[in-house]
Image (cartoon, rainbow, N blue to C red):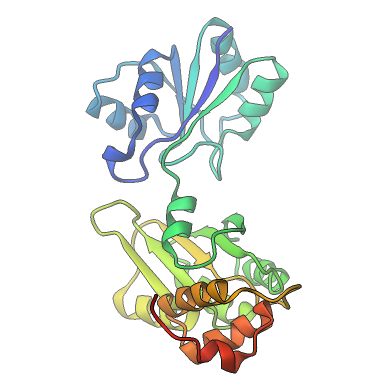
Length: 273
């Protein structure tokens, strides 16, 4: 009986692939790839000659039996075009079928655009909500964002460069002019992370144009805190919001709703260590 390995692959920079991922890809009996042409370029770069089969959105159900047959004979590695498979990419049904068939399912961690954008955003990382791709249609996107207006956790999602300006407009309208981080082309040559209020982000990309793969990180809603925060936590959050592009006065007002501190006291906190 084989093992189904969920192998994370680079989201841009090939140096980000792990030694373990390379070993698994070499030793597997079969690699199930979202796009065999894309994956073949990766395998060629690392001189890996494992057989490939396609496994993508429109054939994922018809391919299940064939991949389970391959699992009965040996290990199978599942990869997406980039990043961690089965996360907004085909894979969920295969994982469920493999588990139901009694096959081990083992993650091989590595690159993830979601986590890379989140940790570099300057926004709170202790708790977040991953939304996948925002809806394509304007009305559906606005409806989703409006349903999240009171969500206090940081929001993370993917968006098409063609729809980024519309998405930022809807974020501003549904959620207010919150701090956001727009991570573009992560780990690639023209990587850019814009941090600032949604309105300023929209103006920035209207002026410069949008290209490449986009990950959006959006500040959570301000909510009333159950207990008063420590000064060190307030200062850390204040510095993070200011670094993300929010004016100190506005950041202080936002934190006052969450921390139990008066906005004036937050505003007057000393800066620096």
